[in-house]
Image (cartoon, rainbow, N blue to C red; front, top):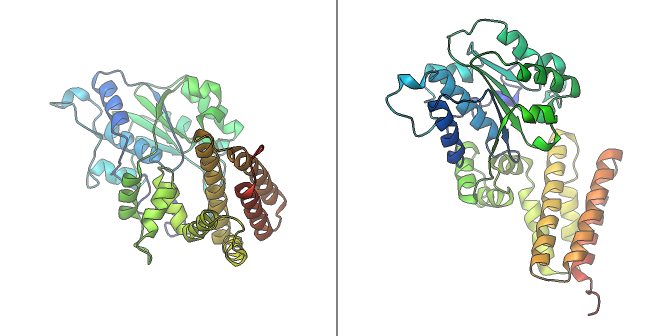
Length: 354
């Protein structure tokens, strides 16, 4: 058994336990229509950016199907997939003990105290052993794969084998952040459901429910704004303590070149730590920086601003530098300072012909 105090997936707000979902009502209606008409496909590929609620959606579908295996038993088609947290099915799913639910996910490493990056072949074969048994309660049997992006090649082929010959009343809910990278044969066996990022108001609502109240009352709003519609990403930003550093970076840019040297040094030092917490902060700041560069270059291009090409070049240069730093374990602080210089140069470059 996994130690509940160590594995972050045992938290109160893990998708397996969270029964509230915002922003994906259209996809819920699509599932309900297929279920009520008796046309439910055996596999769904739940796709979209990371952290927008795909796994929460998958577990909502799982709970609903396990709770309501027969549409004919209901007087009317429900408006949504809600199953109360107090319901026995929801409690069994939360405890990973429902006999008709199998979960394929990376294992927790007791030695490193981290979730492994890959789903191994032995984990992907779990559904095979699961389907070899008789359905515990005689209804649907559901498999949640979270996330298929983590499947190694052997595991992907093991999952494909079961998808190709699914048993009766089996439903696979396959979560993917980058479905284009999956085996084409896995994609072809699934009906794709694309979930969209949430608007900032909904992200802020989710944060109000799952995040601890920060000392800075503006932090939740800042994280929601920077998250690109992903509550999961917003929560990571808060936990990594980089939102304030990135706000200072944007102020540097807004003030224009030359950048304040002391502020640049302070930001670089603040996001260049090592260790689990430092690594998380580094990764999140790098994501914010490259995401900002992409959005800024695009906005300038749409506005016809000649600086757009300079920022596009800075994005390419900085992205390559960050990849090299990660691959070769180079000096993070120096890499960030060089990135700031590239942004400073782009902001101050005189357009050709001016």
